[in-house]
Length: 178
Image (cartoon, rainbow, N blue to C red; front, side, top):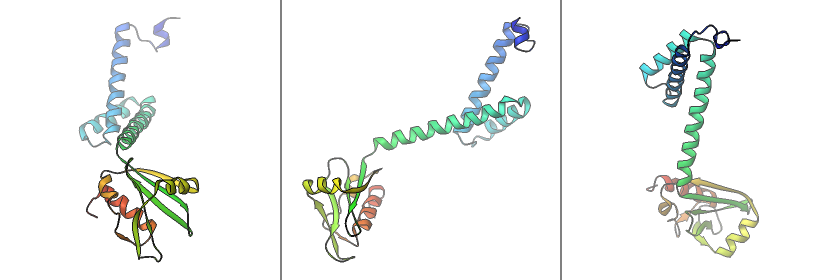
């Protein structure tokens, strides 16, 4: 059995190399087109034409080019988010639940306390109380923020509730003047 029969009648290794190179470049074009969300019109038109001209596995290759490009973009975004300061929210036992939060790794935990809704104050939670509260938690969320100083700077302010206080602090972690 000859190589020519296996590859469908190709007669020279030069033709094999050219075919490989052409397919390789078409694949790169598909990945770049997917990664740029088809926003480069000449590239998008070129890839559409290549798929139409070659048919067969080119449509499948294009699907996998999109899957690979989008997975890489998602992984890159998650990596960047992991480098940002973390906003930690702990939801635990209360009436019916209580929310405490920490804006940045070395900042104190804050929460809203004091009687009625709308008349609460934001205060620092003691470290031993945080450990006790964390042991009875329902859920812990760690979210990226840009401005931990703004998010953690609510101590002493009024709050409607512990939940609205945590949401407000998270918003200030992204938009500091809220």
